[in-house]
Image (cartoon, rainbow, N blue to C red; front, side, top):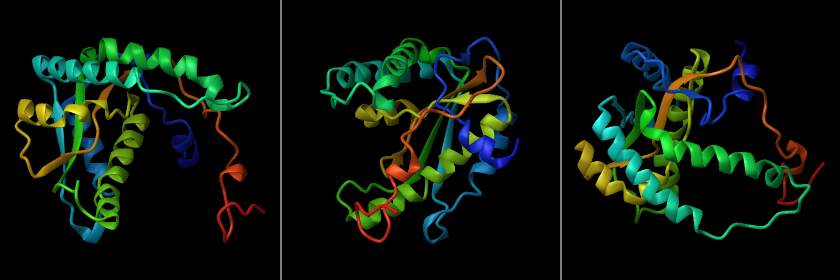
Length: 212
């Protein structure tokens, strides 16, 4: 798979996760080996990846996710014009999000990427550096998984109850969870690029709001 196709067809997979096929731990480890080639601030390499196969722990995490999902679903949403691509996609996105929330624990494996440190009170540059040191690795993991026939969904709603998840999994208090990825083989043959707002409409030159 060439790089452009890989980058433009790696989707958050929800309804197309194949819950019936086992995923080898060796395959997950291979994806993590690729992920940790991502950039890391000051070469700290303070990342870690918690891989969860235990069914009881997956169910407990999924329950936390569902609690958060109920709260998230009640939050007000920005109204957009009917011809906005984001508005047109929302019914399908909502449907797949609800499906994932209802069935998440059926995924054969969860991956929780983490990084050392707590940064709630840190200045913005420090927070940006911290997340900039783990999120590229998470995306690299998703790309590596995609190239091997695995789908994943980047979720964060369980972080509403991050400390409960940490206690469940034995994560130290000085470690920050960045996401929760349910991982499985995907059904169907392939994915296609998503419909996005054209890049020229979100690109400014030299000054905010200035377009070519």
